Length: 304
Image 1 (spheres, helix red, strand yellow):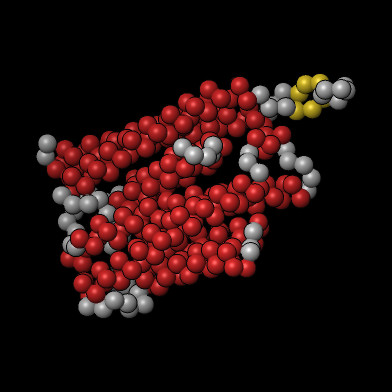
Image 2: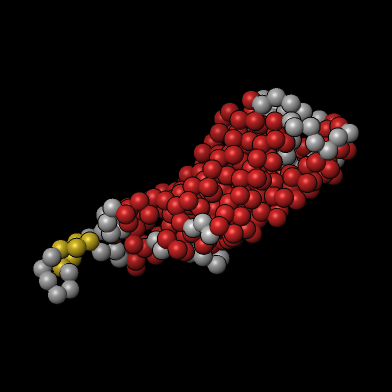
């Protein structure tokens, strides 16, 4: 196959992945709708009508939705690989490639965590986030395959960017869980959880899961920042120059370090920890979106 054929195949697979993720979205939406619009039945020991949730009714739909998520992940993975083959390099040379790989990492983090924790209730939000990222990538960020700029022609591109992308996927999953914690906590403070929300994990489980995800991937993010500094020395002759992207990567590191420190030493739990986790995640997203696209400095690789 020629390079153009691989590029066409990559585009086709990315579009196919979007179609499958759309099916996953509708399946998760259907599952959520049944949870919200649960039938009313007689309560035990009285005539009061209460809403209940029939898990059997949604179990098959949830499994189908998860199957679609896995299929979408596989199609997108092959699409990213095909993009790299078409360009003759790793597919991380511009914002389009960063975005499709970032969506892949985020979905991969969700599916990997799903093996140990029942997070299918997050499937609707994850599918929406992946679809928005891919939709933005193909409509606004797409650029044809092209050679790397000189600064990117380094082995450190593979080391640094792969670590950063995986870290970002896990960080964002932890942020969604922290946001879910805040929403459910607000609901409980106003009274009992709504019927559909009773199927979701307890606040303690959400708090611990968000923390474990951040603690798990924080060393990898630390390595990514250090690898970036070493790469900068190879490319520009200095380890650190307070370039906007370098600065915001460090701010993200400090924010997540503060989150872990506050939990371990100060004992922050619950809402305080969740808000701090969301703040740290917002610094990562600001770096990824604003700095990559509109920022100035040596890290202007968006291709836009």
